[in-house]
Every structure is written in C-alpha cells, then in structure tokens.
Image (tube, rainbow, N blue to C red; front, side, top):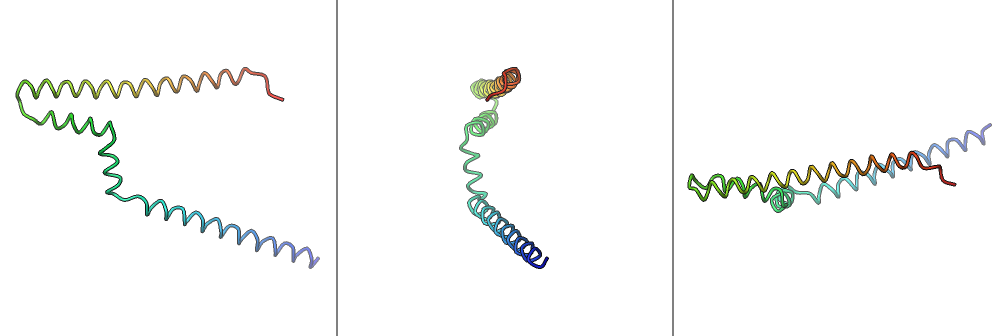
Length: 113
C-alpha cells in the first residue's frame, strides 16, 4: 500500500511541477506580447492602414472649407469610403456563403476510411 501511495505522491509532484512550468511559460509569453506592444506602435500602424488613412483623408477634405472644389472632393472621398466599406461587406458575405456551402457539402459526403 505504501508503494502505491509513494507512486501517487510522485505523480502529484510531477503534475504540480508541470502545471507550474506551463503557468511560467504563459506568463513569459504574455510579458513578451506586452513589451512588444506600445501605444506609439499601435497608433502608427493604425494611422498607416488603408481604411484609417482614407477616413482621415475624407475628414481632412470635409474640413477644407465651403468652396465648390472642397465640396466635390468631400463627396468623392465619402463615395470612395462607402465603396470600400461595401466591398468589405460583400467579401465577408461571400466568405460566409463559401463556408456554409462547404459545411453543407461536407455533411453530404460519405465518411472517409
């Protein structure tokens, strides 16, 4: 009986050490992610992304003034932004259709070997 208890105690120690190691690895990975992300980097990446850039450009054009050229440019930038948003929405819709079609086809196929 004592040999069985010793094996259980050794197994418990092994599991505790393994869980401690995994917690330390997770903490190390989280620290690495946190140290790599800064508000300056996030802001720079957001400002240089295409959707944000075009939105900022549209806002800048809309605040130019009340001249005809400014109004035409503001309307054109809003139309371009609307077209981009519509394109993204259509891509998402197509992707959802593809995945639902694949699920349907996968459900009708006979099981593999």
